[in-house]
Length: 100
Length: 202
Image (cartoon, rainbow over all chains, first blue to last red; front, top):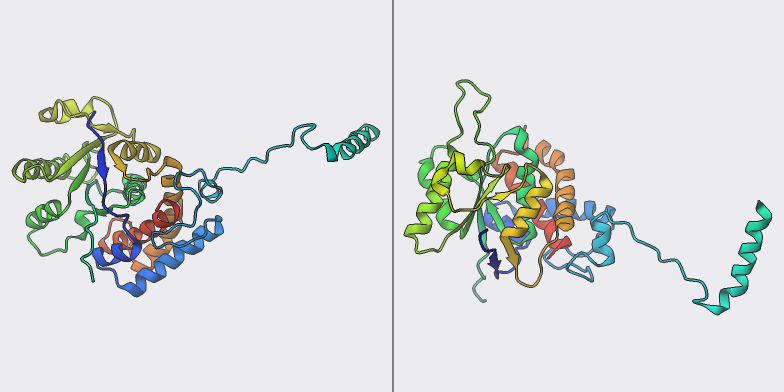
C-alpha cells in the first residue's frame, strides 16, 4: 500500500473555492446560505467560512454527532448516585407496583 | 497584504456517467472534507485543444486521483472501452516522472486484482479498492490522505455528502443542467461541498 499523502496546506474556504473555480461571489453566497440552512435543519450551526463552532474536530462533539446522524445517548442515573432522589425513586417504584 | 497561501488542488479523473453519479459526488465531498479543491476535465471549455488543457490541469494540481473502476465497454454504440481514464493516468504518471516528483497520483478501483489484468503496467502499484460504494470512497480517500491537525471521519464525509446531495436538485434546476456532469453544476456543487466541509470538519 502506498503511504498516505500528508496535507499541510490550509483548509480551503467556500469563498476561495469560488475564486479558484470562477464562480461569481453573489452566487457563491447563495450556495453557502443554502448549505447553512440545510446544516441548521440538522442542528449543525456555526460559521461556514472554514470556522466551525463545533467543540470537537473529530466528530465527537455534540454538534458533530448530530451532523453525523448519531443519536445522543442519555445516560441513566445509577441507583444511589444521588441520595437526595432516594425517596422519589421509592415513590416511583410504588406507583409502578400499583399499576399492575 | 500578505500573499495567499496555496491550496492543494486535486485532479479527479472520473467517469462521467449516470451510474457513477453518487460516487462522483462522494469524491467531491471527500476531497473537500480534507480541505482540498477537486479539479475535473468538465471545467475545460470546448473549442480549446483539449489535450493541452487536460495536461495543464494535471500540471496545476499537486495530486491526482484516478478511478479506473469503470473500464468496461460503454453502453453507447459503437461500444468501446473507456480509454480516457487510463490515458489521463498515463499523463499524470508522465508528469510525475518528468516533473521531478512534484506530482502524486492515486489509483482507485472497485474490484481487487482487476487492475493487474486491465493495466498490468502498473503492477507493483496497490490501488485503493472502494468496492463501488460511497462509503468505500470515503474510506479509501481517508486511507490515501492525512490532514495535519484534523483527520475527517467517514461519518463527517457522509454528513457533507447528505447536505450536498440535498442541494443538488436546486443546483441543477438553476443551472438548467440535466446531470451533475456539467461544468457549471460541478462548480456550484463544489461551493456547496466546500461550505458543508468547512462547517462540519474545518
